[in-house]
Length: 346
Image (cartoon, rainbow, N blue to C red; front, side, top):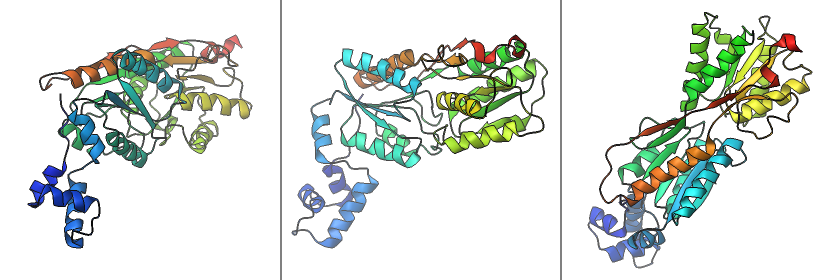
């Protein structure tokens, strides 16, 4: 599957001038008029022209490089995904370029642009919490760049996707809290832009509905930057804890939100689970040694990375255009520890 790269020939054809004139204009040569230079620069930008070394790499057939876009590599889940990506990539002779968005849409666009400059053969991406517009990826996909989404995906681009079973994980987590005797369960989650937010919210609501518990919108708090901003989590937690109808348990929907909530509850002097229970999505390997040990929804990060990379390489190395795509859903695992045991046990 070949990525249709824009060359100076395309710009020359678009403007009706020679390739030599385009080359010189891009190099700001004195031989070319300012008017022509401006036309060439505008056309290059519009066609998403990339510098020459990218074209040279692709002309050889393959750069044997994959681009990776994640929020942060210090996130336990994403670090495990990257391990899975590298495991498959290196076994197949590919190098990887890893970039971080830090939950910024603008940085995501910039990172993707920089990866294209590196002449990558394909892209693995988990969208930032700020990303509501994926036109920067649509354009590249339509030009033939192989793209595979993982974890945080977009339905606007028809390609392979690899996700965890977010609905079932959230459902089972909420159900376990209900079975432990908790009835007022709050939910602290991420940005509404992110696919996992909707999936986990549906699972949470489904468990409440199945048990005929009140659906209290005041118990649902959104952190628009996915937990990166400590103040967002503090504000969400304070609103819940200061409410006259204070929850008796909290279900958190992301790695960073979960561990930060545990830290803040300790800081505020709450005993867990005697005062309030906690269970959340996180792949931290320290869950067993935290105080109390932390009940978690575990995602198969390594396996997600492996599968996404296998699918991307299959797109890159396909000799025919790929028109049928698959969304792979891998199971989560709810691990019950002390933080969500019945409060009467403490």
